[in-house]
Image 1 (cartoon, rainbow, N blue to C red):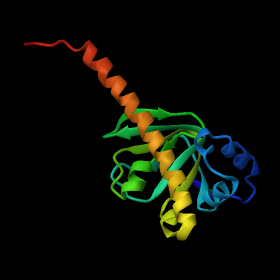
Image 2 (cartoon, one colour):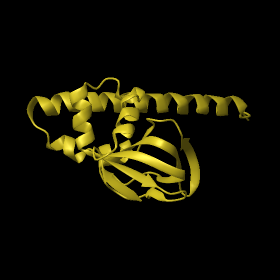
Image 3 (cartoon, rainbow, N blue to C red):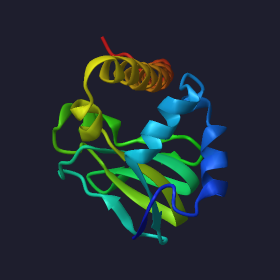
Length: 162
């Protein structure tokens, strides 16, 4: 993995990140603050971003490339859209990661340590926390909706034996 401080020479990446739908609720100063708590991480094909069972407070946004999420060494999801977020559940809960994340091809991510959000004070903490947790809620709701659809599809194909 190669890692850089975000704002050092990464104006093209910053411009691309500003276009992510997930960051639409952010004001410019909030987005700049998020960037100051973030790093750009570049991974090679097959490189592990984080392992299942590991614990940390980093969450990730796909900038370029693809990320495969693996549970018990089995693929569960492929993230390939710019702005896709992953690692948020482990970061939010400060619990062991429920899955591993592996780069598929060369992959660039924005990595943000939400520990820094907890260190903010006053209105900065309230405003920033509100926006970031609203984003998380939206992401988790989308994933729950997709999981429910898959469950309903599976149930529709299952044979009921009485």
